[in-house]
Length: 276
Image (cartoon, rainbow, N blue to C red):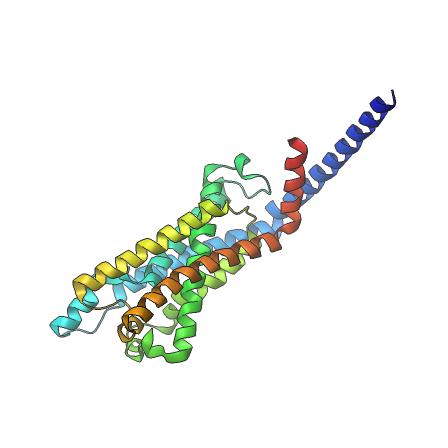
């Protein structure tokens, strides 16, 4: 009899806790999916999509190397086109991410809830951000501006100022990271498992490093002037550091996400524990 009363009391306490968790999740979702928060998220993804799409358009049709280059210089600039630059590939990734995020805002779900209950487009949005959009953008932004501050001729020669406008430079090298931070604060997500997330990040970067070597083989020049002045050991140390830094950017994104959304993630963890 005593055990039955104790068990009944435990069940009542568990039900009361589950009710509190559900009420808090409902309150969180009401605040998060409606009103100003909803409009800010929609505005962020709209601006991101329009900005990066226009950046790609302008970069493709209006940024051209000077005419009448020598044959060797012409081959260097022509082989691989703009797709040999991580910066250009990253802007494409950002545009695709913001398109998916905007579609999710319109027809998907931004609710705070476990991934298994979310529509496919929401799962795609969250994975794209974790594996590609955030780490690659911060690799590009931080690497570019650190090298630029040290010696801009190694990463963005002053001769480019005549053909590459300053506003476009900030779209492709600054705003990619800034909008990623803003997205982090406006979009709840649970990061994928580290195995799944890092597999996507590392696969992208390894393919890009292979692509860099293909461009080097056919054009006779490295994509970035910095690689031309390094000896062989330092060059591959630099490329390995590039891959390692991208992985660090992945962990940075995971840490920021888990810190910013810790109350919501804790509620979901409690809810999942109760349901098991």
